[in-house]
Image (cartoon, rainbow over all chains, first blue to last red; front, side):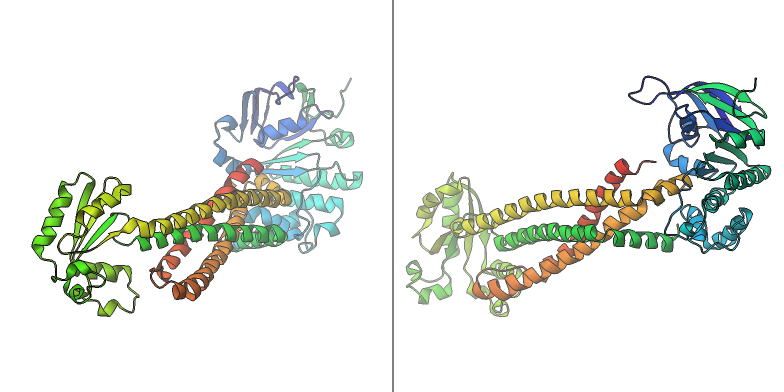
Length: 229
Length: 306
């Protein structure tokens, strides 16, 4: 699903690489936490997968494709097979919940009939049945993140990338979001989630990848947030 | 491609950016009307030059039947219409003159054809006959400023009614029109520059104000074309409106300046009709849309990275 081969990334005008010689593989259907303090390289790691950045050295393979060999105009097609969720939800405030989800389908040219059918389905899946016509501003943070997840998942992507999806939520809402991501994972979608939330990582007992100053310092199946001594 | 969805996005963009859109439309309209004015000036100059306009410097008219009765104007024609032998004699002299580059002959019949071509709207057109014209020789000189030497050689020869320095009559007028054309072109270049800057800025502001939308579009895998199209279409739309306004301004300008004023005051000059004006209009649309779309595309390369 995702393979990093000796990947390093150094941004221009910076001495220390953001990622330093990272190699790892994530299999289909896995649920993986990406942990590490701010500046550890988590964001760079995710941006490389989304091909918003290119590695300085090394190879990144996503969905079986070498991203270095992917031409620019094919990148949008690659991204259609990935779902992305962010800490700040990134919803369009002037569109309804349903329109926000439909937007993701409209801009890739899906027919109207399909959109009408799948949008209510995916909203029901994330637990927002009947809230299709509400505006994002009328929803709680947890509900807004569910809309974002619905939008990311409406295309049934192979891989869901979540960058601190619970970062803006209280513990109760966070648990709801984690249950939802777990449910999505059980449908066969690979989930890669960057997080600072220690309680969640400890509770879920999934694979944990830890980065520190650009180095891969831990890759542990059924791990917890901190080191276990 | 969902046309309705795209149109809705374009409409939102135009409305959200209304003041800038108006500025672009006005600016495009002004620069395109200058383009149109320069083009029409050019066709006016060509029309005035007529058939012989820039080909010859000296015209030698021979006596015709009517000149005999009118000896005040043409004292040299008392003996009647110039004979072919007289014409050939003058032609032969000119051919030997080193100052002469080329000699064209125009018979009265050809003169009728040329007149009708140059003044199709003239009320006289149906009445002109070959009798109204003279046999003439049109002479191109190697050095136009030495006109006087050639003129004095043939003036007063038997059968020669009149010798005209064509350039003396038309040159100042052409100079004036050429200057006007260059001034229009210069202002046009400046206006084009201003318009381009304005379009670049408008597209940039528009792209910035919709950063959230375009960010999400990229995230869910919308193609570049889909992401950029609304911005380009906005610029193109403004250009079309600007071009239509410019066409209107040119049409009004032509009507007021040429039809209402100049045509009544200056009857000697053949002015352009609606033909060239209508030909210019689609060109303005093409230039406007091409220019603004190109500006939009280049701006987006910089401000809307994938």
